[in-house]
Amino acid sequence: MRKSPKEHISEAEWEVMRVVWANQPVDSKTIITILDEKLTWKPSTVKTLLKRLVDKQFLMTEKNGRGYLYHANCLEKNIIDDNIEELLSRVCDKDEAYLVQSMIKHAKLSKLDLRFLIDQLKKDIDEAPEEITCQCLPGQCTC
View 1 (tube, one colour):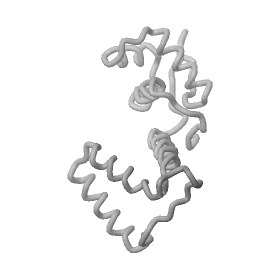
View 2: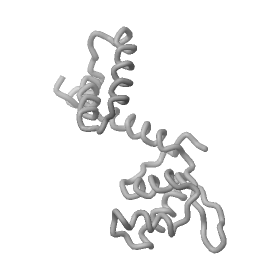
View 3: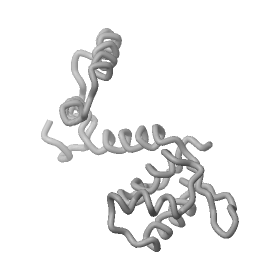
């Protein structure tokens, strides 16, 4: 399994990938049925998204009678990490803390999740710099 393809994944493709990650190997009929509860997509829309994801190498296919079974070619956690790195690259280094704080504020977190974050922060505090310096081009931020 590859770390993750370097292509972008759209919101619609993400919906399909979530079904594949949770049910692999999975056929298109099952994907269509699951997504029908949330979205009003036609079967042809789902099949188009599956083809795109195969073309982008997010999915692999396996012949299954007249159809195919779909398998993820990357881990969900790797795609999440890629998306986080991409988001962080779009903001000023000084604003990354706000981004993380905002994510924590808006995320649904259990007590166990919060304890893990607290423990991680306690471990990281000794190695953290006193201040973050801006790495933006002049005119890219208000620092």
